[in-house]
Length: 422
Image 1: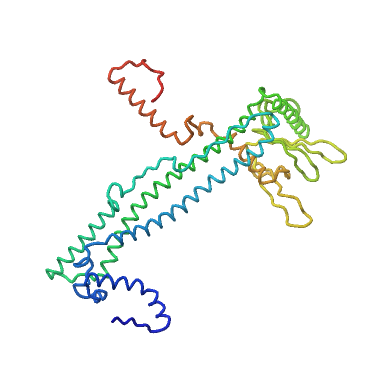
Image 2: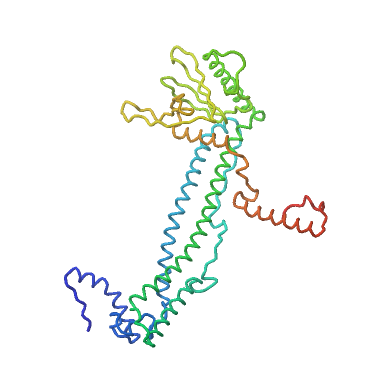
């Protein structure tokens, strides 16, 4: 008969909840013919790992530790992977915005837009990891070493108890140390797997970012370089060139300048002025049209809607800053977000685009990034893009080493010089 004291009703609830665990413990003690006094931590029978108990942690307990450690690793991995996924989703969203804004231009010029990059599943990327259970079953090398260390620790304690050299530690002191040792071994193995899987996810995200940026660049360049090969694009670029020239002439006239314009006036050839985007804008109380090319933005507005008169405003995109200004919340102000244009600390212009302030600013940012980035940054392979870049670099390196070895051996330098890399 076992008496479990309950000093209050609340204690009785705790005892009732823990009874399942206690019942399993008592059942295990009965099966091993061990006295209940073992729980008291006194006497030789309470020693962790001493006979008739196992010298180390049993298989079921190790399996439970493995499950707990792996669940923690998966939760951490999902959290870190979601943070990486956010970058890829933002890039894909901006690319979708660019595609939607450029679709009318491709349709108007009868141009074929570049094909969308195909998604690659995460499992297609290489995982530089081998489960430790394969090389050292059933738990891995680190866990096996930890279990052996626990067995050696309990064996040394048993020898000391037999010889009477020292008072051994209680089982309630030794057991947590053994569990902590094995749990740390599982965590170290899980950290290696987590690092490998996170590295593979990072490669996938970088691949998606590179493909999105390459698609943005290809789409913009396809329209920009259509001058001279596409009649409609050439006509639109010539019209933009005339409007840009009017803007430069108006600026020179307002500043009292005469003669030839300088490069600072934004004068570019018509071949570099293919129109990427055309939309309506509202400037003050006047309506107008905005033209965007690969390097410039032009506003054509009216001075007064009734009297007439046209105003041309031309800005280079390279140093242009745009800030989205939210409208004042009011029933009498239904206007959407406006955009303030500035260069450095100087405000130059303010307008409201018809397609939305945030979308317009995002589009201008992508055009600026394409016009200023190095084309050599994005290198893609015919076999599938960034996924195979590392493999191809390794093959080129191996082939170069073979060529050096062949030349050192006295081979013909000119033989098969144009042979493809295997």
